[in-house]
Length: 148
Image 1: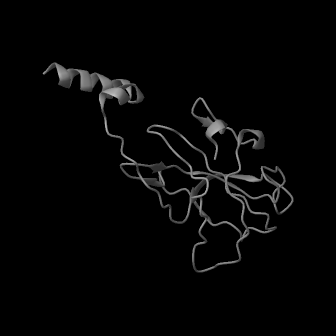
Image 2: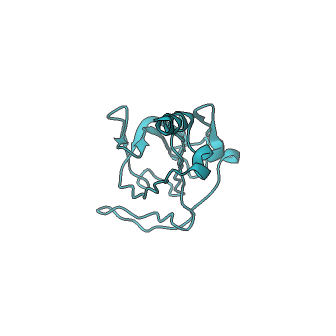
């Protein structure tokens, strides 16, 4: 999930900084996406939080995980979540340095996610007892409103 793998806005690509939240075997599927159901251990993001997601396959060829060459600065962007391009990893070993073809770099830069992301949003209702759990700008705005 990468929560501990983010240091000063950069994602550290070393296994010791990552937490495994999902492990499953999936059969081949050339025409439909395979669902990775993370509901048992969801990735929870707070506003402004950065999270890296690493998906690995042990298949010994490059037919396992579909990714695309980076097309835009942002792969997806809406009012709740932004998905940025990243890297593809082509090694049968988790965070391995040896690529599946035996030479070169196992990390391929400027790649982007292909597929669907399903997520839910939980709105937080402000009240005085929850004031400190909101950001500085929002707390300042609430204070100004109470002065009116």
